[in-house]
Length: 317
Ligand SMILES: Cc1ncc(C[n+]2csc(CCOP(=O)(O)OP(=O)(O)O)c2C)c(N)n1
Ligand code: SF4
Ligand SMILES: [Mg+2]
Image (cartoon, rainbow, N blue to C red; front, top):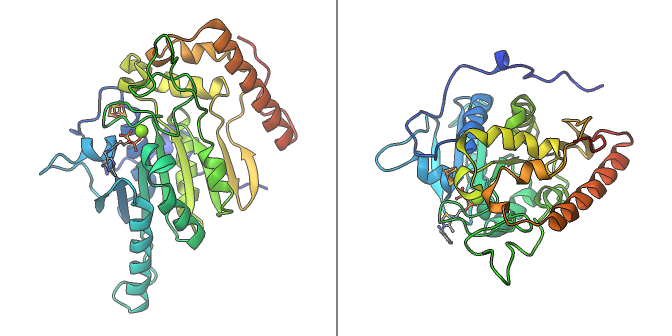
């Protein structure tokens, strides 16, 4: 039988804050929500290794910082390598008795989609294969946002970005989004999950599990981005929830090889509801929307078969 979830309501969320206000994330940016909740789960005995990206530049304009836990900024390509080194160093210091061996210190690598799907992937794969006890959190805003909205391996098909423009020839991105969480799961690490700040208790429970497993863990979080997705700042969490309500984003976990869908969707919404709130998809035609809907329907069938029951329900609105 599955253990009861640790975070069940808003009253279970710790009050302590480890990400100070005053940072420069855009109005309505959901990255701040994700990082705040991540640190509430992890607590003060935590070292964060942060690749270059929106979270890094916005929280540490020299000489200020929003981080109330030890934090290191690393290059775009090596968050997982630096986190691996820190874990190995702590092991050595514990073995030598410099640090109390019973002290638990969380090591979190935090990076965006550009820093994970593309340029940091080699370091990530190595960290997973070597089995370092590090939780890698990917906040996925589906483009290189900090440098001006360039496409990444995580950008979905048809999305407008500055390097996948919309005009007579191109209609946004041509390629599909890379299935990064599945690729990570193929490394057979103890814990892999997808999460969504719109379902914050589910996300926090996944952070907790990821920190507790004895080995690497990977949490892939969808992160609506006001500026790059082009939506009204009040809709960040509405969009996060719509991603799951339409089944474009399925919240699942794989724990020691056991796959589970953690947020079931009894009544599924049409993908159009998700697209119509975002300027990056405003050029989509009816045919293109329907083509994406068909693909989602197939994916839903696949997931329901895999789980052995209907966890994602029929299309109703
Ligand atoms: C090797 C290297 N290439 C390019 C850059 C410039 N650069 C810094 S952050 C960034 C984009 C980061 O994208 P992502 O990882 O998705 O994070 P986001 O900004 O979207 O949060 C780029 C291209 C860099 N710092 N290092
Ligand atoms: S560009 Fe997007 S991800 Fe970056 S701070 Fe602004 S809203 Fe957040
Ligand atoms: Mg990004």
